[in-house]
Image 1 (cartoon, rainbow, N blue to C red):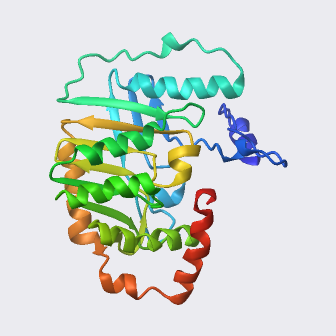
Image 2: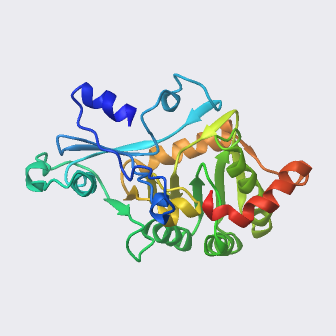
Length: 293
């Protein structure tokens, strides 16, 4: 609330989503995890990037911070404008005239399709997880995944394993240096399960990989805010951009290739077996409460 006052004093309109109330309530789990920046209704940015010094590596907290985002122009921006204004209206209680924010830039040239989408814990559709599962199930050659938090449920493990056993090259990049030690302990406890299924796991060397990306077969990709953990897939308000045969697919592929070749360490069978007793012990305990973390 002090930060809200600081911004308000500077003339910035600021609202607090779901402020903490000292009472027992499950609604405290519903966090607004979306990252949306819209400029004049014509340009939007979406990805993993928050507004803090570590995201631009001005301040080093967990080694080198790796993150990604995409820039949209044209009609697709309207989806993000609506997500922002709807949330603003719910929190503020003020009625918004939406049409005044419609995109005015037309005829933006791009191949393929761009579909920005949101996910909400208040409906009966797990959009974020379904999009990810759809990409995994439809992959023919490869599926590359980048996520800071890897706590897959049984359904996600099943589709990842089925893809790998079908001959699809399934690779996942996680951080080497975690921002939350307990999440890292749980994440690494899944490495053996994934190795057994044929999934290749990599860790981002010397830093924290905060990028949330999926890429499949040089055709489809997702960049957004959605992690592979219970909170992100089921409890948070999230958003992402799905792209199919767009021009930027090659840039996303180049980023993955660079990480695999130069910035990541492939987790081996020996790495898994050499986990410390403390890590193994804590993972047994923490996996029982993984959805709460």
